[in-house]
Length: 358
View 1 (tube, rainbow, N blue to C red):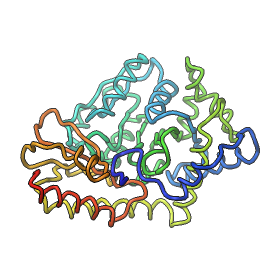
View 2 (view 1 turned 120 degrees about the vertical axis):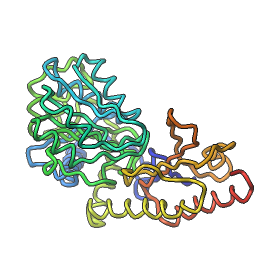
View 3 (view 1 turned 90 degrees about the vertical axis):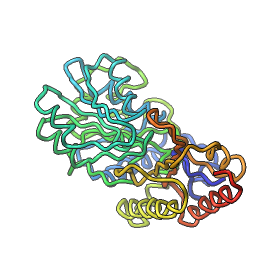
């Protein structure tokens, strides 16, 4: 299988080998040391301040989103949310579920966030801002510098879902004034799904400790207390935490976060150049390095996603734009992929085209 889907993604042999081994007992000094090293490496790769803390929550990326909403916001907050797709809407739904006052900036599928969109929300009494910095449903990457400037001039607490963007696009918690970054094990970290990672600034830690979360499992205050000794309140996804440790050290030893982002960027650009020979187009001007959203120039009578999967053992992701009848698919550039893998996908598309299927 060759997997260009958007998570889980292709894992390295090192990560796969750890997954094949017996799961160890975790209430030990040895496992605590690994967890504390994971925190140190995550802080380095997000350029977080020394007083930042990292939570490793066993669950999907959405568990990290919900835990953040439950622990850092109260009924005194008024949150502004970028809503340009399925995951922006998820933040809206979570805030409404937990009775957090919110408004959303609605953005058309595949469209960029602009300064003009933000200006109408200046000085409107908001206390916080939430954004899926890569709106995975469309592949759009929102301008973190633009968002950072807006939040600073309005003194907003900034929450960034970087589940698909971490290690694919540049983000610097200190430079951009980000208070919470959420990511997950199954995207550019290229491990199996099962761990949401929440990195909290010192200001976010204070919010968590001064808040009362009405949950046992999602109580970040309890998690922060246990994290001091490199542990979690309840049994974590132990093997995935070991895989994350190996992957973070692999990235560090290969040159660090900058080199990893460059690698992903090169993969994305290579694919975007090669896809130009087909009757497809890449319409979005603000795509993340993590993913390319491909539109057909005309309505196709075949489902390319299914043909690639069933006949070529190549996986890409579907996409849906309710305003367009075009066939759309998304190609990921995260994980253990190469330009040669891009060639394999392109060759498969050439073969499908020769067969007269599009």
